[in-house]
Amino acid sequence: MPQPTAPTTAAADRLADREQNATRLLRASAKHSYDPLTEIDWDAPVDPDQFAVAPHRLSLYGTPLWERLTPRQQARFSVHQFASTTSAGIWFELVLMEGLIRHVYAGDLTTRHAQYALTEVADECRHSTMFARYISATGYPSARPTRRADRLGKLHFLINDTTMTFAGAIFVEEFTDAMQREMIRDDSLQPLARSVARIHVIEEARHIGYAKPEFERRWAAMGAPRRALFRRALAVLANQAVLEIVHPRVYALAGLDPREAQRVAAANPHWREARIDWARKAVEFFTELGVIDHTVEKMWRRASLLR
Ligand SMILES: [Fe+2]
Ligand SMILES: [Fe+2]
Image 1 (tube, rainbow, N blue to C red):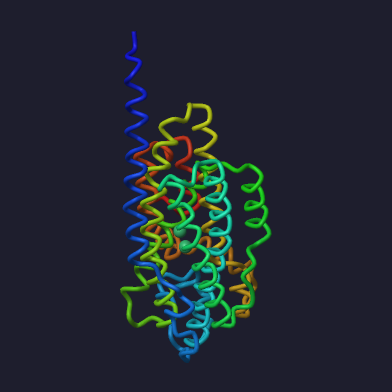
Image 2: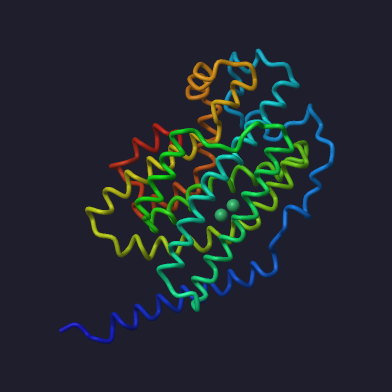
């Protein structure tokens, strides 16, 4: 006979862990939260020859198309690639915020766990505004996602899968975290881009600390058929999120044919290396849990997120 008290105790322990984690994250948020509108000097002059992202981390670096650009055009390309990345950030953060709001709606706002979800929404509101300001400051023309990403976002609104919301958050946040940490370390890069990266990295670390244990709890409770479907859906989402960081308009703005440039970027070993490096932490996390396994490894490899 199973002990009737055992599952109840385990469930209570899980809830206590969840509350403890949220309490810690709320405390950290109270100490280290930034208002980018006042924290960043948006009117400081921008040096047109300074890169926003290191050259070897740009999608066309090392290709014949890259060699066709003047050094100033290359620097401008790097600024546009980062602006496009922040635009993809806005797209993803809006989808994430919607998912977190639904998560709170389904829960109880007297819990620390739900209160932290709203704190994270507040962080993401500031990030999306910050990214939009960066886009405007650099003259990048739009914060609109590609049509494909737009459709995927709307599909997520319809499906409303909270577990996928958390998995997507872990992938995107670990990926941008790795990219932006490189930017912070490199003081030859554009100060404006580095300020944006710095604020984002500090606040995103908490989001990852919130999403990971929540995802682990949900994954542990998921049955085999749903897991099989989930593995594929996450691989699709990760691929799309990474494709979105270089919008075709980045190539058009450099005077290149977007289709040709996209083909060249897709085959560029430097760009493949960058994406694999930035995805590493998320891929390790999902592999350990079995969310990435032999059934989907090929999809991750094809997306240049796994060696
Ligand atoms: Fe963010
Ligand atoms: Fe976040």
